[in-house]
Image (cartoon, rainbow, N blue to C red; front, side, top):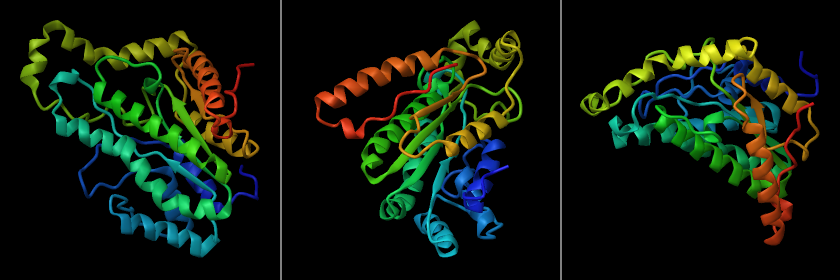
Length: 288
């Protein structure tokens, strides 16, 4: 299924990405479910879950893979959690926690991986983002804020590491109404009394999953979550240096590709005016 030139741990990482799962964060001792780190564990026979909150654990994972393979080719940041509800009803601590999981954890993982990639002069950082970072939606405010933050960090870091031969690609899926734990055991807003003040509007939140499913059906049926893994495989097959910043896997067909084309055009023009054209990303993929 995978070209033999790719290290075995990369194949494991992509396989795990196909079964993307988003779990509730359990605080400082959480086990982030990130495809890369799961792949690293299996490659080096570390079968136990890896607590990546602590720097020494992240460093140990990277050191172990370097000892076994002498290089680090691909990192896939896939840690994530979801919150749904009226934004005002969430506490500042809840919002901080989801931003920590969905954005800052990416920075933590990259900081232990990038030194090796810079020494190598090549590598690939992949992220599992969300179309909500491009096209915002109501009732998932903390989630949207966290994914937008993660998307921005990934993009800016991507510019800064391009001169070292390191590619960055954000896989941008829409919502999956089945095959994930998106809508299971969502953390409730800390202030239900505020939710009650919104009256009938708050009841619409309960219908979000059904509405998304109806859109999927109208578009020919929902995508399987494995589409994210297949997109990762497609990215790996692309020539280094020519990979686009974002790959969209959007069953709801929101039109985020059109936003990406305009954004890239304006950003590329501005970077050229600033004399930073070497930091610009390749053009977005166009639909056939």
